[in-house]
Length: 92
Image 1 (cartoon, rainbow, N blue to C red):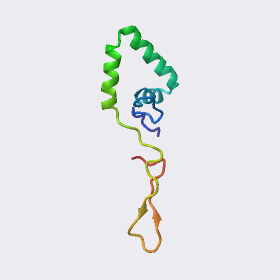
Image 2 (cartoon, one colour):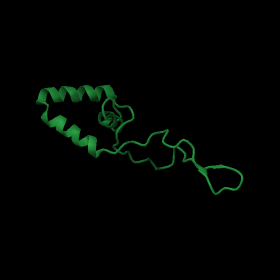
Image 3 (cartoon, rainbow, N blue to C red):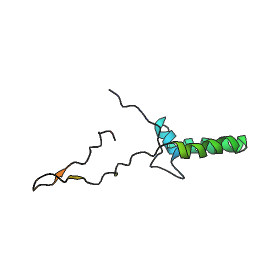
């Protein structure tokens, strides 16, 4: 079963990660998405795209970082510290 894609901010960010997240969602080059955004913003007179971008900054959730969990251990384990760090495949 394929995982559902979620539109989240990217860790590959220039300002806030919105355009990087859109490029990851649609499997496009981030530079291409940023270039298209700048061109569309310049040709439409700034207002619509800048307004949408600002809204997206607040609405889009941050993506979970690969290094979000350093190591977590089960504190109740006897004598041995058992690693309970989630695998990369686990959903958060």
